[in-house]
Image (cartoon, rainbow, N blue to C red; front, top):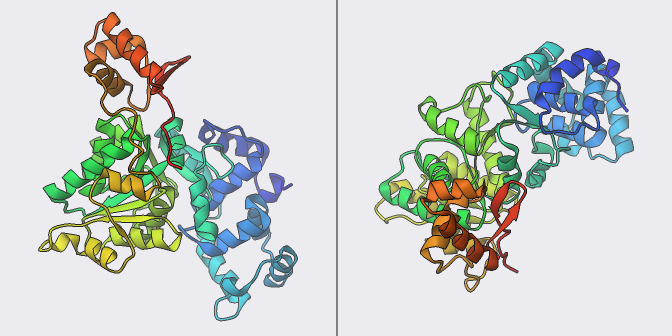
Length: 415
């Protein structure tokens, strides 16, 4: 086990840094948690060399080896003992060159002060940090292997983060048309009704429509940012980001202070692709970030759907190419997306054909938790009317009651 001393930090300082960030964590290893924060500060997104070090030796041991200035010869021997193939870790056949280049990139950020500053800035914004050891960690990120993030900085609630365990990613043009916005809302509606979290990038156009539609339906949505969560982009979406933070979550692998640069946007796309059980593209040109996300999805084996547009719409050329080249399934409605996710066309949700009372009660409950009083006030129902709606929904198995109120039961999944 690696000690605080091996990471060049004392226990008191480490505790001061990590304690505000571990709001929802039960830390079995504070040293590993600190090391994950440190690697998040040190590395650019998708740094596979850092990923290989961490995969081979563990997050804290890898940091300790770097702080100790481990030689290339010693590293090669250690990799050999761990059974790691050096082929992918050598630049032009030279491991020492690859290691030297990595250290040149990392050295300016390798300080306790930098990690402490990130923690302080995140605390000021009510945020927190989670690692792959967290029970909330989205297992889908494992698809990125050595390119997976060391951790995620979060502004939002733990329930929204937990909802990423069942998520669909939706991306598209910043110059969305009314047609694209309609298609997005149609698809989002079907997914939220099935309990899916919607993941997107917070941009203008299709991204924003996906977030807003999900929020309007009471579902969970997550916006993946390219820079630190104190540098939210675009600034014109300040109010939308506030709503997402309140009802969903803002996440980034970059620490506070990191600018949302072009490279980080491209790398951010791999997280959007990995977080979804499928990726849906609505309106995109062939060289857009949305198509970049689609290609990332294909690389890691995610189902990919694309919405066709009018044949004279240049804004849908990227979607048409994905479909024409048999990279994406053509999707025209929510049912098509559900089929892409493995649902049967015959598997109609039990909520079809509900009466007026049941529908109004279920609208209030959404995919959160609602008390009896909240249902009455929000739906404009009497106590007796709310009771009738709740009883019917409960008998159908659509909702259930827990210590906090009424919540939707787990949906019927496809075989």
